Image (cartoon, rainbow, N blue to C red; front, side, top):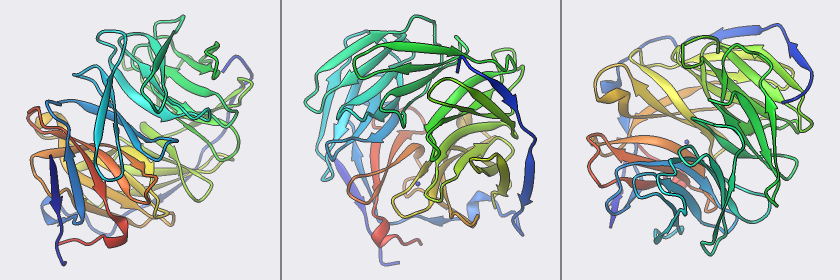
Length: 349
């Protein structure tokens, strides 16, 4: 089912702690979300009987791939909206995060199955057990040709080769656990450090070299991180801000214009900007229909998704030059969607 809306009017090594250079850039006003414009030229593709879609990535095959938790499957959608799904071998795998590998396949991490999975463009799945209990985890394709992942419960950074060999590096900070991870513009991996299950630690951005050397920088409650088109790393903060960190560690922060929201997932769009989802503090477990865009100079625009019954989960830059994202129903009805924003026709009302 397709709904289209068109109107005229997105470790094991040396440990260093570097000092923080911080610049704050605030917005001149703080409107509420009710003042935002509605995003147009959005096409939504319903995934039948889905209530919980999570991760999304552009695949090496020209399609977009996503994780379908409640169906225990990996899905793929073509640029024109044709959807196929492939069942993961392990039951209750709890797959959240997914990434395209340098080997022409798509890789994903099984939070419940405690495994790394690899799926070919034709749908063949191979799974590799992780030696350590991982808990909540994220995955990304590394600059070294391998796939890297974080382990919240194991408090480690892991690396898996295309052939399935796994190496784990302990988090040397002992002040929080690794979370969201991305491949950096400097040939390293960058990740956020969250508080542990007891709320201890966090407030750091970490960098790990392919050989396992870790450096951390103080940060303000980071949530998710991605590499921007400007050669810097961009991350979201619980403090209601978007942060930018240079490869040398200088941090700049930009405040959202809405006073009752905070940014969550973030991704680089094909339009040269960064796109992020938002959460709120009131009702529906923070699920909100707001999304935002920030330019590399720090200008933020926020808007509403067309359907008030859906909230955005994650973004990815699609192989077709559009921005793709996951939408789940605000009341968990079985009608989750994969959305596509036509950036060339982007308008609001």
